[in-house]
Image 1 (tube, rainbow, N blue to C red):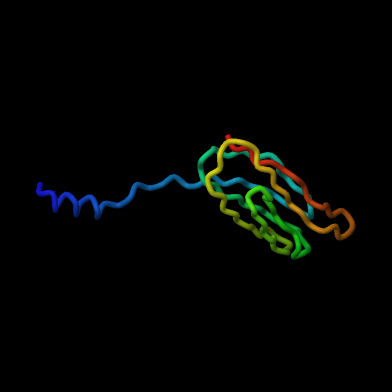
Image 2: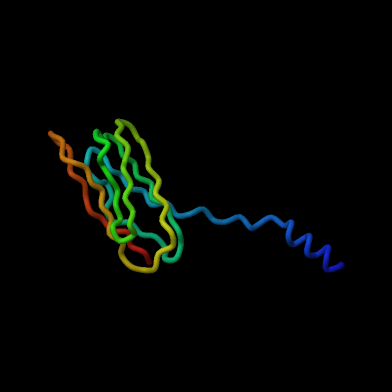
Length: 118
């Protein structure tokens, strides 16, 4: 096969299907966290999916100070999700925070947690 035909075949080839990114699930309901310790593989990008049911303020936030990440969470009653994309990280702990102002009654103020990268 001539080199020019081989080059066209290689250039036109479809890329291999990539595996989906790992997804870390966090729940933040009425100011309380359902998960504070999660793990992900090292040197692999991953997504964080935050379920924010019963958040009654638009000043709640998710933060990873070490990575400069701060995301305002939606104010809603039922199951809004926020997706945060994180690039590949070296092994080690990554602290995170879910915060909300104290409003009243049984609402919590948030929590601190750790993403363990292994």
